[in-house]
Image (cartoon, rainbow, N blue to C red; front, side, top):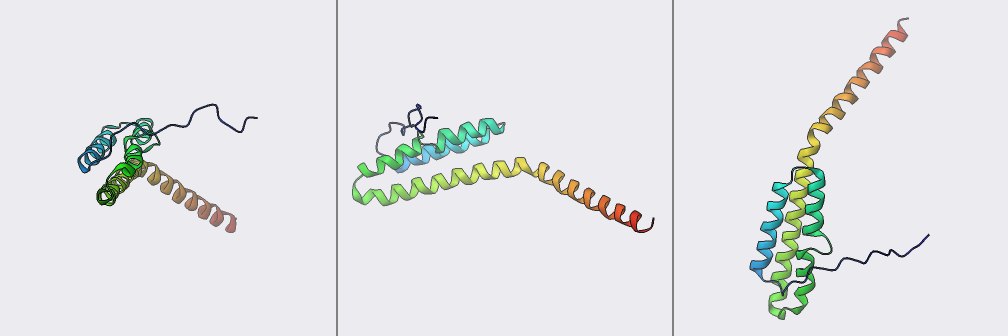
Length: 126
């Protein structure tokens, strides 16, 4: 059993030093990709391509070091906030998809509870 993977670690996409405009553009691209996703499989691909280790945002985080000191905090905060927005949008998408399943689980639980109570009533009166 090999403990080390033969697969190379992904590296952030080669990107120039981030600017507020490029970070906003990356956010817009990611949110558009989430909105266009039609399945969980597509959404997983979107998540990997926009939040993964080889994503543009990962490249921005790596590139922040190359910015002048006075720009690092602002661009870094913007990139971090955008990453949170993307994650939140992904979570909302999954939550909306899961609602019908949660409803069915609750209904199933309620039916099972009623059936158990009914069975208990029958057995008590037998």
